Image (tube, rainbow, N blue to C red; front, side):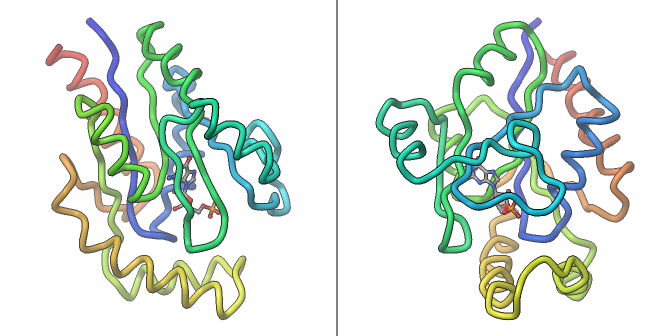
Length: 188
Ligand code: 5GP
């Protein structure tokens, strides 16, 4: 029996971060990758827990040294990437592992680790997605427009994924994800 890698992607503001946070709290047995990013922390975000907040030079070095499983410029601004070592260690220790990343990153992982399970988190509707993005209130007008444009493209990518989960309510989405992990363990 071996654990598999789960890649959770979906449009901006669909609630990937919230689902990942609930997973971290309710299912500590699942390894959740902590990404490196060049963006600054938002209030309440803790270095090493939500992200590894790094400067451009550090990110460059991580890329040059092949430390990242995937990386991408997200929303045309900052770089985000998945440190490879901790994911490999979790899988080697037979711990299910999950990445919460953007679509470009998911496509890279699809190439290098095609055995991973690709899960698309989708909103109940476009209007609901806009409502969540506006309601979050963490971005300015210009940034919000940029993210909505990205989200439109991202929604069209659903068919590239193995499974879709509609994020109506966070705990239900977490349960669906965990059920997938249990199923996939039995398959192997
Ligand atoms: P935020 O800045 O709101 O935390 O995240 C912005 C976007 O970056 C989200 O869509 C999130 O999925 C994506 N993201 C976070 N970490 C990574 C990563 O390691 N790689 C990639 N490709 N995207 C990431």
